[in-house]
Length: 284
Image (cartoon, one colour):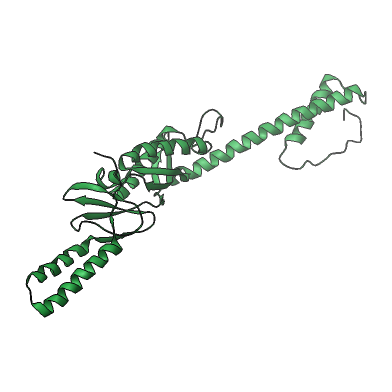
């Protein structure tokens, strides 16, 4: 049996009244009668005391009698059960787990540092109590294993084409969904419900961080230059077309080449251009 079952205990207030009557009554009667059996009644009232317990909101108690699982009390309040029951407290509250940053290799072998933020809660108290040794430590270990597996499935980034495949940096929705599915499967054995799982920290490892930063900067510069050249070609083409249509000046191929060269230098330069005034002809 690996299923959870609810247990309905006796009201603690009712049993507290019974124990109080037995204890006080046996003491008073014994004081007057000296009847020895009343000592057994008094001893019985003391034996009943360990059966009292309380359950806070979003809490539970797993009841076991000599190795036999009797059920789980999830209703909050003050109760009494068989005093020989062991009563394991298991919280049903949602909990946050912020994992340590682990150093792993991504899909293409780059060393990265990654951490996960997990929101979880106990859903099945039987599995949490008996299927694993320590369900809280089980969550930590399995979260670490899931992060390592996730990092090996995706590259950190893709400089050649961001749209070519999912990456850890750009495909957060897909990556977080895969992480949550993986953790759900891993923690199901311990009766743990995964409410949310997402990457909380992601960066290149320190030994390659500076090199990757320069690579990112170079990629950005190349992309910017590509746009600049593309725009410059369009502007030169438009200028030549307008000059030809309006017949402002008649340019032969050599002059067009010189004009194109000058315009491309002006439009693509990363510094302001210093104009030179030609006071002679077009050829000087």
